[in-house]
Image (cartoon, rainbow, N blue to C red; front, side, top):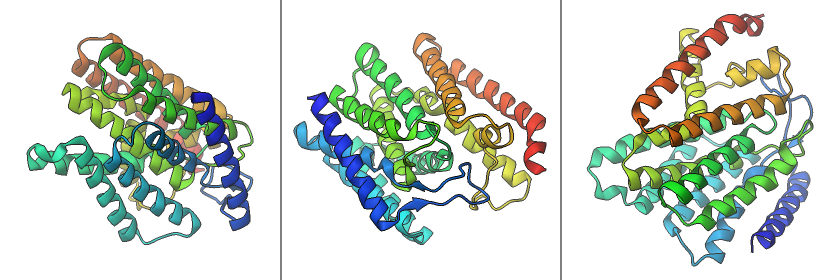
Length: 313
């Protein structure tokens, strides 16, 4: 079954490439880009195809989640074709997250859980979109997160159908085949970045609701620390945080330090894998979470103090 799913998703991805080429869905390099050649955009739409395939093959599970994912993918793909108004994107995102919350059963909890979840999930979705900038980072990092979730689901606390994890892992492998290389065939685009973020947030929510353990957010710790501290840094520089930039830690590594994209992505994958392994092994989750956040916050500050002047120049 999984081999058939891989072949179906591979064909779907290749079919999308032909469509993207015909419609000129491309990512042109600019002063804020970390790449230097024109590349097809939106290849991450295969993540949606993977979830749709799971829905069709495995008894139509999680229909409200899939409805939300469909809305996210539609507006994100439309944005890949032509930039859409921010208010329109926000409307789609809020409705999509409302559908996901309904699938979680979140509305049975006190109302403030919904508000906090809306803020938290919006932040994570945008963090994935911000971090999608170099070859391999979105697909590779997400695959590490899925691997950790699979281990927890299999050996610690079952919280989701294992076939769900298998299908999104296959979709990630297909995407990484074309993206995790020196010269990428495609980029994830908004359609890919937002859809995989939505999928991972859904899984993380299922796990947290099942266990009541909020420390599992550490499964996305590296993206979270990088994104939040970059926003703080830009506010300190009195910049408009909604404008494109190249001030993320991974961007400094790739652009100013001239590290190969795949090496930077591999570093992010390795660090997140180590964080996830510690979370699984160490029993004092909240003390461990505090230690991780402190260590990586300090590490971020030290790195920027040493290398940010290269970006300024």
